[in-house]
Image (cartoon, rainbow, N blue to C red; front, side):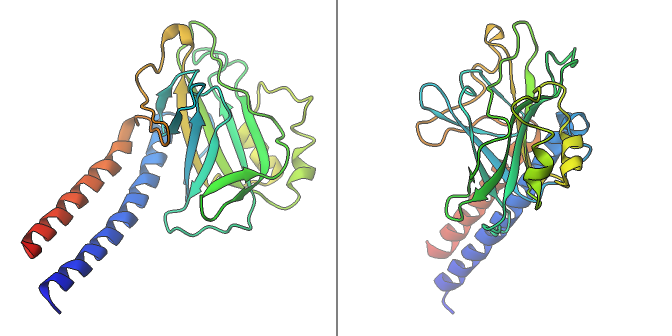
Length: 260
């Protein structure tokens, strides 16, 4: 085997290892962010995701914003219903399965006074996965249509937690009596609801923070682009990017050594 051929296969192996480690680290970072942000135990009793959840907003100026766990976003950025993407680390997920998606606010009306939390911002079932795009599409009407974040003036930023569950058989029959058009959105308990309808543990999750416009919360904390905006992460999420940088340096060194 020639030197160039050997270097080529080493490059492929390095990329494969890097992709596997990157996915694993990302799941670890999401879990850590849920702990650091006290989503566990304030919303969930425990959280051990097996799949990555991308939450993507399109703001009023048609810019897209990708949510990373714990990012600060403005009310303008989160005014429209987001899209959800499921990305398993191994690249394999059953497309014939159905999923339940929920978004709740555990800080209503303020983080210091949670007398009406959790506030249910969205709840829907019968989401199906597009194998080519990873997009989750709702195949039926939501139990609770999306309501955008509107933290009151003077409040600290609220946490908005999005989670995905595998949908069990008989979900409609068990969920509809508990959540319907006449059910208050306030004082919702996601964990109790999940237990009541047999959802089990969430398979994926993400969360962001939004404060009232008068506070200017989130201003400058998220970068946007016309096609794939990305929000600035908090806590340990940046370690994935650092890992990718290390792999890139290794690949560059291999190429320089073997080919020049």
